[in-house]
Length: 107
Image 1 (cartoon, rainbow, N blue to C red):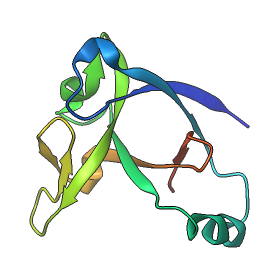
Image 2 (tube, rainbow, N blue to C red; image 1 turned 135 degrees about the horizontal axis):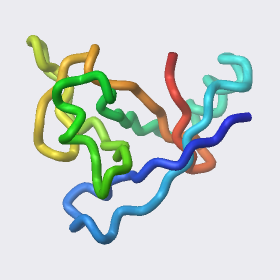
Image 3 (cartoon, helix red, strand yellow; image 1 turned 120 degrees about the vertical axis):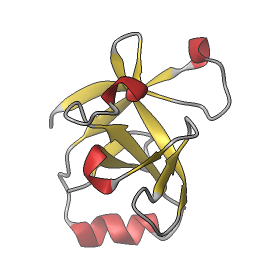
Image 4 (cartoon, helix red, strand yellow; image 1 turned 90 degrees about the vertical axis):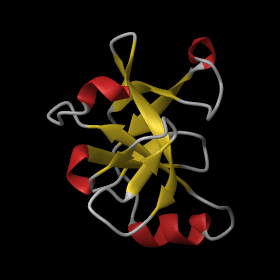
């Protein structure tokens, strides 16, 4: 299992209080994940892709920052992130916070 470290924003917390989160790729069957997910709510996070023209908005001291998706709405830029900005789907990589607190990349 490959693990990469990313920062996670804490909503309105100032930058020095960002904590490190781990991300992993999918390793277990979807049915097992779905059964466990029903017990607790899942939180959707996103990283701004390095290829996006908005990539500079998703970095803190040079490291990518995973930001919580706070709201979805119809339109060209439907994803509202913790930083207060809106983004297109093609500018983001999506993660779900697993039950163990790690961020699991969605395909």
